[in-house]
Image (cartoon, helix red, strand yellow):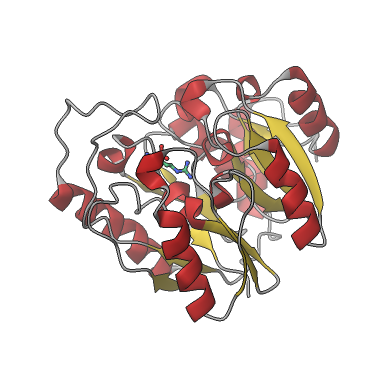
Length: 286
Ligand code: ARG
């Protein structure tokens, strides 16, 4: 069964016969990009001299919202705040698990007010809120996988916050250092496919991080530079269907060959802020 000699054969056999991909019901928090624009350069994708179009951002964001709704997700919304350009990137608003929400403490002044805004939302929506002592940018740098929390550091989230995480949640926390400024949050360099499986760009991690990922996930999908550069890894799914950047065509093929369904979307306007699908998505685990 594992002797496929060409990519084509592998695609045909495993995609057609793999009955094991069952969806897990997802609940997510999103924020409409009503005030989205680019006025700073807090990551290398951002260029304030390039014009942004809020109407286009809103329309593209809506396609993501609608894709989630069609997949049966519960989508909850937080009110956008005027002047907070980046609030649409809800993943950075915190990290939730077991009814607890670890609040975000942003690196850059531009986003600092988002921390309390998201914590207020968590408190009003049934979470036990843990105020952060250390700088961290929430689920942008903390991804839940098979019992462990994979946690990025190097550009935004501090290593100290990983210890804070260990103290709040009853999970192993695996620290991974990011080394490429284009992939400054873990969710730009790695995607969670389901409980056991991940995809990542090896070059985004230091040697120790790469070795750790190889050891833990020998069957991971290794995504290439071209797909990662359109933020193809910044994707979200329910274990059966991955919602991904439609320009990440190689990643799409890799996913399909492993038996995942894919939905490709264009979030190019939000890419001007250095974010994609996953950035606009915060998973709520009550
Ligand atoms: N402009 C935002 C920033 O630099 C983009 C955040 C993207 N979010 C993410 N989870 N990767 O903070």
